[in-house]
Image 1 (cartoon, one colour):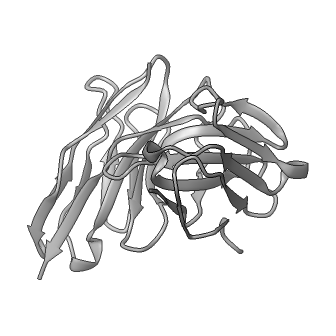
Image 2 (image 1 turned 45 degrees about the vertical axis):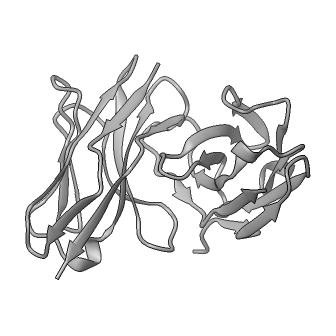
Length: 116
Length: 113
């Protein structure tokens, strides 16, 4: 089966510009996650969707970050305006069964963002 | 809050050496525990998992045992190979919070021939 797809793979922008990342989860997976991974650190959960509803966005900087999951399938994460500290890899993951704590998350290759 | 603490790296070993990467956690409930691996140029992938105390997860020669009494989930392999060179992440998912996960900061392993 096809894995989690993300685009673009790399993005360079200047501070105060806007940027958007796209994720297509594995077909049939109800739960979708966006993580931020700063160099040298582990992934930090930004937002979690179950179908097209938000389960958890407690660590999403809502003044500049937004995310949506269109029709419970694809998702877009946006940063507007970007800051230098937003430079990171943005990972998308999906899992099959909502609410199953032991469920495996499948990760995409990530989008590497550099803010100058 | 929940947290995962991993042994700091980088770790450099010779081929066929024994590997241990320590992982301890704090959680407000009863988590499931995971090890993910990230090979150079690739995305994160699940290596093994354990969902309750005393469970042992294993895959590709790697093992980890869920120790509730010491809140640990140390990763071990008896004989590492050059192809095991990667970054290893310990993670927990809390039972009471639908799939929300907390990751450690990762340990970089380099295996030399």
